[in-house]
Amino acid sequence: MVAPRSPDLTSGNFQVLVDGMPPMTVTTVSGLGFELMVLEDHEAMSKPGWSPHRKPGVEKHGVVTISTVELEKAALLGQWRDTCEAGTIQRKQVTIIMHDSAQVPVQTFVLEQSWPSAIQINSVPQAGAGWIQVDVTLAHEGIERTRG
Image (cartoon, rainbow, N blue to C red; front, side):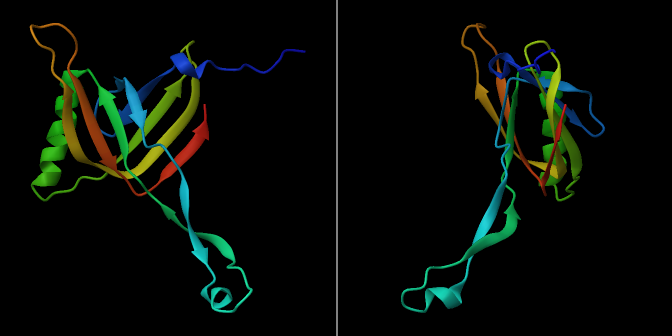
């Protein structure tokens, strides 16, 4: 019997697919999280000796930040951001595929109705040494998570 594969996620990487743009690899992804608001029963809180009852509420959607050193593709994201700033918000589906060290897809995240809310040039090398890294913050309306 073969034991299930345990991926080495410490050396994994991410591929990002944005509708209408070529695939890009990114150096880091942050903000891929899931959170529900907690609702407390105010009736129970007003009675002495009663503890509040908590139940899940509405899903909270944070922002996702991707970082890349592929400047041509970062420029495409910048053009997308420019159209949003001009008042035409083009919401797109963004798929983030997490690979393990063997380049096998481990987890896929789909950001629904996404648009770039911020772009930042994070690192500018001096004297031509090093890489320029561009951080793009994506607002979205929800994350769908699947295996592989």
